[in-house]
Amino acid sequence: MNIARYIDHTLLKPNVVADDMEKLCGEALEYGFATVCVNPWHVQLCARLLKDSSTGVCTVIGFPLGANKAETKAYEAKLAVEDGASEVDMVINIGELLAGNKGVVTRDIAAVVDAVADRALVKVILETVFLSPQQIADACTICKQAGADFVKTSTGFSGGGATVETIALMRNTVGREFGVKASGGIRDFATAKAMLDAGANRLGASSG
Image (cartoon, rainbow, N blue to C red; front, side, top):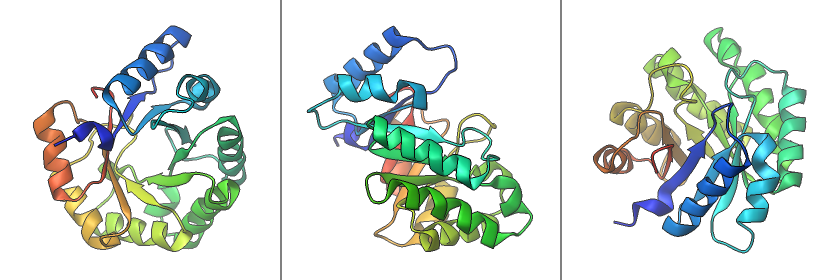
């Protein structure tokens, strides 16, 4: 199994410098990872380093709390795409989801979807550690309705992470054609394969 093509090779720590990005992109090119996943500041550099390769540049929006206003997330996503991002991983408005304000959550996601206007894939980070199974299912449905392309488990900044059970629930909710990204705690081949077997079709990992 060529597992590399499923991996978003991730480096989101606050203390990284250009040399770290060059190393990350070099590894991505060597192994053929799907993307590198980096903070917005590093998108331009990574886009330049990965130009004309099959590896894309993914960035994070409203990260890691999801508590920015929809307009802020939309503008951040727009700038990231202009800088060269081909995918954006936005954090859902966790508090409003927990409060049951589905309309607010839908509009938040749709604002980012509209901002990138089919120029980039939109993955929505649910931060499943905070959610019940029913809330995870509801969030997945909202993401589909708002026009996103993927649902994703975790930021990696709030504890918890992807589990086989959660991935199976997400896949069963969104159906076969929608994207499911497992992220958080994926550090070895066996765990990665288990996530793919459960229904993920993308993996976020800093241990790519």
